[in-house]
Length: 532
Image (cartoon, rainbow, N blue to C red; front, side, top):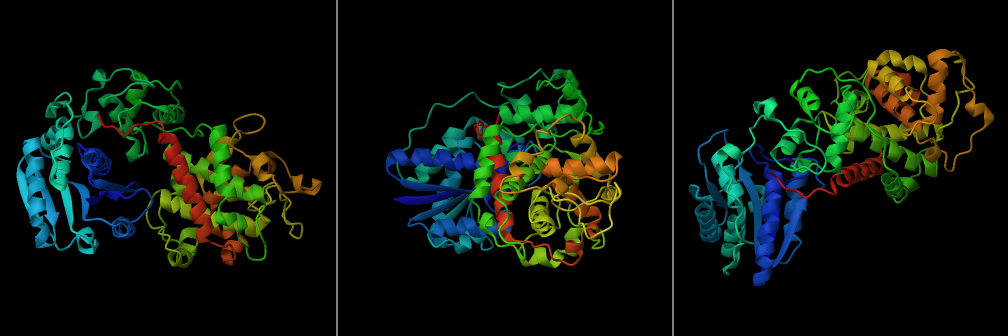
């Protein structure tokens, strides 16, 4: 017998959440059921969508995977939701073909018996994409309700028994259940709002700790990814804590004690603007490899040719930095990621709306996708303005020679662009805070395959304007970030943008998405996906 079983929704298309998270728990169930099926001779294939960034793509990707396999049964695992309650809500199993009703009824009854929850039974649904489009017999399991504390407690306590029961009904074979763990009571579950837990009950926690307090910490940390909320205080959590402590002016030690708990409980604590910690050497090397192997590294940009090796690799690193800053809640990066403002006179997302729409890039909503699409256009602007040469000096045919108007760097930005947004000044202050070479500047990477003349390095005027020119050339990631900010608030600063000469390409978006996924996976790689 061969079965294909997948989890509902996806890494970037989250499902229901409450006492349980649907995506995380569906993945646990899928893999545990598969582990029970294989020893009894069932050929089982599992699938989780880690790619799609919209619902239509998610549904199609899951169904396409199922239909690409030779199998006798398709199974999709979901979790239900209705409203927050302590009442037991139960389990059900959905089908569309009447021939699959008996199996759906058996699975629902088996889960209900093991979990000691109401059996809502087999239910016919004719409106579900998965059931309507898979070509083999199919059922969709709604395991329990994520917003019922009674359901969540029983599910946690009887997890292995529930998975074994599902496997037994799917295979028709006897499944030996692993020994159960300690029982979980509804009162043991973390509150839906972590701040409902008295702050005086919070212990001091640090790397290596595990449990409900760590899980609540992860839920309280700004923009901590949903799929990393596992109750395990590993390297990703420690880095997020350190970034949070730095951004709030706290003692930076990576240890969550009374001071950090107080800050997390106080929603309106002012946020200081500090850059997150630099990328590690290992991650830098891997991101450069991703960039060098990407299609955009061979792209023929209109009137500019192939980009310098350093531009593609350096830009990928600049994007990785800004994406990590977005995850850490760094204000300039969060501002860049806001959905289109509706004003094409100031916001490039509105000015280039048709170009984004043509390539299927949705820039209407706040978040990482909008941020990435902005940076895909930014990559094309850099090639148009400077052919990807980070040290590019001002346009010598122009008269812009004052400290505020002299253009500099990849995007030929001038310091007077800071009038467009206070986030420009934040970036200037934070990059300028250190001495010597900036660890997030990556001038050494951008310089590969680029020749800079003495004239290129010349700067004009004095004060902040002259310093800005120097920073753009020596720290190209700073030039990228300030340009991205300017594009959202003062897009008319750039002639190639006004004339729509800056190219927006799908290949640039693909590269940035690959880097984004690498950042996500590398920061979570040491974490087992467990929930307290």
